[in-house]
Length: 290
Image 1 (tube, rainbow, N blue to C red):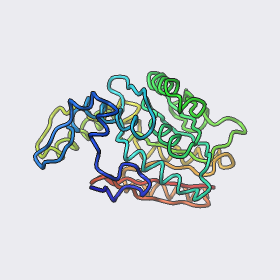
Image 2: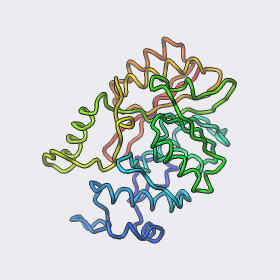
Image 3: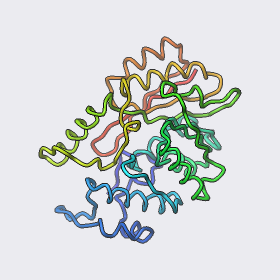
Image 4: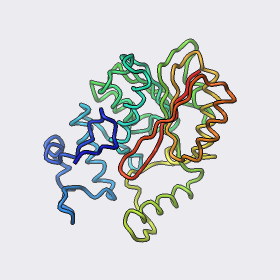
């Protein structure tokens, strides 16, 4: 079955081929079963199953032999992450060869650089504030030959900064990507997960497991997504001559009006909003340049 909502170049448009996936990562086998609709699948509410699936996907499609996450850290849905990279590539048309990219909040999983390096042979700087996440991302880079020399991990020392302290004097980037923290507090993140899980299961779930995990810095920050993105927008003006395209994910559509206001105030030369769909979920990539 083809997932027509995904980008045309996304390798995950077809249903998962579990036979192939198990062949490259045998531990996945214990999580695969036939559901009530006679479809071969896994329990996406089981964190161990999701991690096993991701390991298989990264090995089969992205040449990643070694990919481990610290306990509790964000285990991202690979098809959605790939969509962002492909839509970002479209900003450059046919001129997207050998781009240099900055990933704000690369995380412990290092997934955006993994996909960008494999699909387009881009080079990446991954910025991260959290010590354990930095160590994990660095280990992934060092233990996979395809990433060596292509991905550099840098520490952001100031949580109030997004670009300042990472982009160096005279340094040029073609592209900035960002998946900002969604929630404003830890409690809001927990309540959001309860609501999401309950809706998917069709019943109230009081203490759901985070099937995709996520530590505080990955899930929430003061002011949430809106403040994070607006801070990124204001800092981007300072680097207008060093970056071609700035982009970020925006989960809440209602945030865009304020984002547009600030971009207009800063006199952005071009602003684009690209909708991305994965199943029932709709997100969007906000892109701007000066």
